[in-house]
Each structure stands twice: as structure tokens, then as C-alpha cells.
Image (spheres, rainbow, N blue to C red):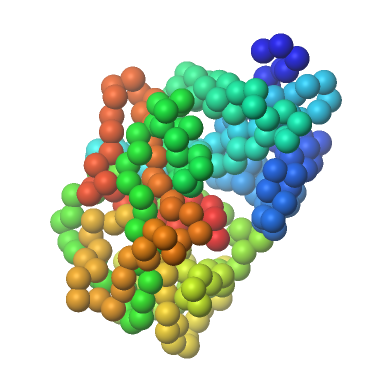
Length: 285
């Protein structure tokens, strides 16, 4: 690519500073793009270091794309894959197809390294690029349920064909986000993981854990959380007869679309009716 050099992301000290500066330039209103957050994402993940590519023009970082390693149960098998995360192009280098080149280099490298898939959440602006240029499947828009009272209990024996497989180490890492604060609350024999951030005056529920959760590292709430928001897909949650509604698309800041790319060479696709994926699984709040 004339004038640009593509290099794998190494996440060294100087490179983290350059990546952070580019992300802040590309997204000036996003307060979570700090060196501490980038280091936490790219180097401290117990599933492995970030996988991605940078485009350099001399000493200037022109564009950046990265994915984070994750484990998931895919059609009954525990498999390592990638979460598509940060992408940014400096305004002076836009319109040159850098993102597509970086993404394709990342997926080729990842497939050779044995990663089986890439999953991500794309907004309305980026979904077209992922599906039309990079071969992703648009699985489904995520539900955004808002309401009062207890969330539905999970039904048993639900056929889940894709779900993030959190270990104790990876879950503890996820809850150490340097920019956001989390807490837990017991709810009918389950543990709710809550964000301190709100949407439409409601607290975000990152995840629902049916099994006991080690809560020693984050605060435990005892008061009533009146209004809650849950974002994701889960075939085991029956929202009928609950005081929750799916926020209409026209009232959302941007629809969030679950996308999936198979790297195994077998052409696997996800059925949204059998996918479990919630806010714990992607990094927005």
C-alpha cells in the first residue's frame, strides 16, 4: 500500500500512547479512551494480548484496528475467537480504504493463529462496511429492554449455540475496567452485575449470573434498583408478562447489531434465536 506500512499491534508503551491519541482524535467525545483503558484492553486480558494491525505513514499512526481474544462455546465446543473492538482512522488519512486493509490483515493473521471466529457489535454507520466489505454476517439487532422489577428467570434446557465462556480470571479482568464502576446485587437467587451508568434514567445490567459469583472485588448493593436496562440476546429469557419493553429503534442513540465472521473455513453462521450475548460481552459501558 503506497505510502503506508502495515504492522501488527504490539501494544508497547509508546504504541499505546500513539493508539490512545488516535482514538481520542477520532472520537473526541469518548472519555473512556485513555492509556489506562487501552493498556487494560490490549495487554491485561487473561485470554491473551490484542490482535490487530496499524497503518503507519512514517512515524505517524494513520489508522488502527484491533480485536480482543475471547473464549466461547460454539455449537457445543469451547473455542478461542476474537471480539472486534476498536477501529480509528486519522482525519488526514480517511477515504483511502485503510480500515478494510487493516481488518483483512487481522483476520488472515487470526485464522493462521487458530482463532475460529470474530464477533462484534456494530452501530448503524459501521454495519454496512463489516457485512459488505469484510464478509460478516448480520446476526441480529440486539434487544434493549427497559422497565421495572425483576428480570425474567432463565428457563432450563435452552438450546444455546453461541455464548461467551467467561472464566473466573477473565470475569475479574472485565470488572476491573479503569474508566467505569460496577457493582453486584442479589436478585431472586441470581447475581446482577450493574453499571453505574444510566440510559433513560435506568441502570444498565451488564449480565445476569445464575451461579454464585465471587463479589469480593466489587461493591455489593442492597438498595432497590427501580429501573433497569438490559441489552443483548438470550433465548432463555422470557420477557412475556414482565414490565419491560424493547426500546424502539427511533429512540436509541444508535442501533447495536451483532455481527459474526467465521474463520474456520466451514461457513458457520449464527441463528439469533440460539445466541446468548449481553453487555458483559462487549465493551461500551
